[in-house]
Amino acid sequence: MSKQPKPFVKTKPQRSENSLFGLELPRKYRPFLIILIILLALAGTWLASQQKMRSLQERFSAGTPVPAQSAPDSIGNNATPSPAEAPGTETSPLESNVFEPGSADYYLYEAILLYHQQNFNQALENLLIAQEKAPENEVVYFNLGATLAQLGRISEAEEAYLRALEILPRYAEAHNNLGRILLNKDELEKAQAHFNKAIEAAPRNAPAHNNLGIVLVRLQQSAQAEKEFLSAVEINPDYTEAHVNLGYLYLTTLNPGDSAHLTKAEECFRNALRVSPGFEPALKGLEALDRAQAPELLSRPPE
Image (cartoon, rainbow, N blue to C red; front, side, top):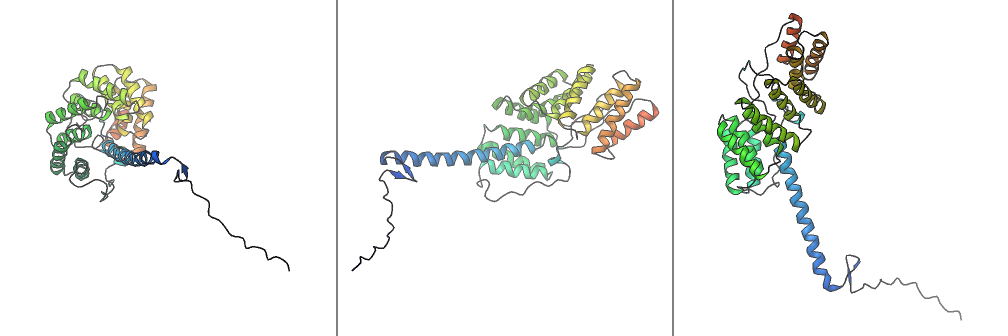
């Protein structure tokens, strides 16, 4: 009689007592591994939150245009918004689970949304609450400065920017916005210092290059101003005001009447109109070229 073959039986692999998540790890080290995993998860959440807040800060206020008063002794206007900040562009809605209600970040985010709705008084109320909850948060003071400037409270805005810079000395946007306030007050050397610091902290900050160019024009340093305007349009080819400032510089300051510079001026004005058809300062520049006379200069940059 032939023997019947024994059925094949799958056996479960023996799990080592030291195995955790497939890793050979002695039991005494397991708590440390679990703690490490928890800490890494918390760190990732914190970094994501910080990145979101930094992104919000960069989108907030610095490029938002406000009505500017005429200033015939000035050239340029740095109010050109970035593409994401163009007039009429809607901001992303607040996600319900982004920040815990009642936290400083929550009030800051609410203030940013209110700011973009041009509800500056309520934005200020939220920022003051955020300031109480996070008195060492440079982003709160930066946005506080921008909102106060919109409300015409320029001295308080200047103090808020200075406080932001005390907390974070290499805060490029705070240097830029503070420089704009000083430029409007004709404190040119102080404004120049802040624009230089903004560029040092963020070399590809196009508004800071444009603003520095405006200061250099007023200080009668035309060659250096040309370099700054060229840097601004190289960084951001769609920067309409920088194109126009460069065109006015060629038309009125750098060898006025020189045919080569007049050609460059026309190119600058047309570059601005390519980005923003109907942009009045560029149209005035072209009209001035046709009349062979200097154009009316652009208005002061807003705070």
